[in-house]
Length: 95
Image (tube, rainbow, N blue to C red; front, side, top):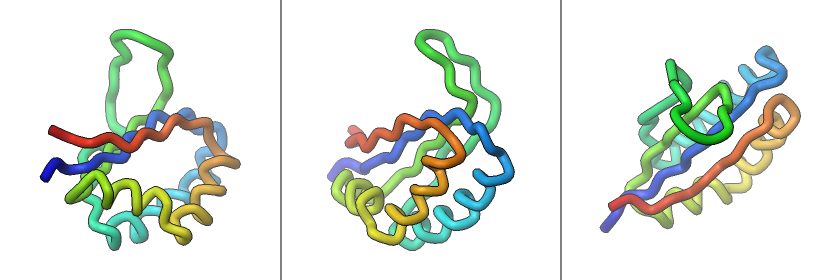
């Protein structure tokens, strides 16, 4: 069965406030089976519109990734990200 991924491209406008999001979202996602693959770090945009932060979380299945994104506890914490950053979040099935 293919794995699932939550991929985020994020531009943080309030770094101090965003730290709270990371502190709260990490235990939720890990508890739902996430494995962090990419979390910040150096990036070079080769094409398209750049954002300043990129994250990839791997899940056992696509459905597990969807369930994690839609988890009520995560949905509540997501409000912090909405206040502190602009983001594009994608849930995708692996190969």
